[in-house]
Length: 308
Image: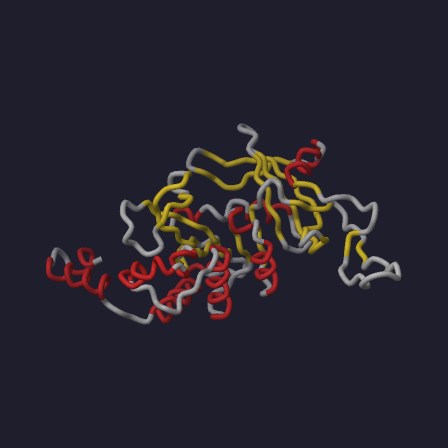
């Protein structure tokens, strides 16, 4: 930045480096201003919040939160730091909105890490938060600020498997388009539920249960495999560097599972690569009358977070 604005001034470069590494400023105020700028240049009514995790390989043990854990960068367990990131994407472009460092539970709560916390300057008030909780905190902050328009949230299955996160997103009026594991359970039709009739002995039942004889939920991959050929359509997701990216899609309304009982009615969207056969499965709380073309577009809106 200095070279672009001021030319080759060595002292100016060192000054900016010192400012970035040692300077102190109001982080929240800067983020709030950034979101206003994003709204000005990229904001759209159907803007997309993109939630993703990213990990960073480390050699030593001195960085905050570093430990041997799954590292997406190498696809296996390794010594690394882990972060959670929130981005924004629209037809106008994409950018990063916020970030959180994942601090493992032992780093926060284990007394054997007390000295490491002190050396790294970890504030005493920091508590353990899962990655979905960190993502939710960032989305809440953007939503409550009220300065950046957004309609959607996209995420991969690391976040999509967390039904509490999905229900939180639904609770603030946003529509999620979440990739979910292939073994995620759903019902094709809502099963009947009731509180069992009291037999007259013992404690009266109070917990709602699925009715006798009602169907078991099934895995989304199993459901996708049972769909007839005429339920699948070919659609272009986006124009790629090597030409259009095309996939086979099917979408149907299903009943999500919540603690073993029927939950909200949602979209199940399944996407299959026509060349490799790779299957992607998604759930969305978007309205039932939404066009398939919109769901197809959303299936390609998470990729920008991988770039930024």
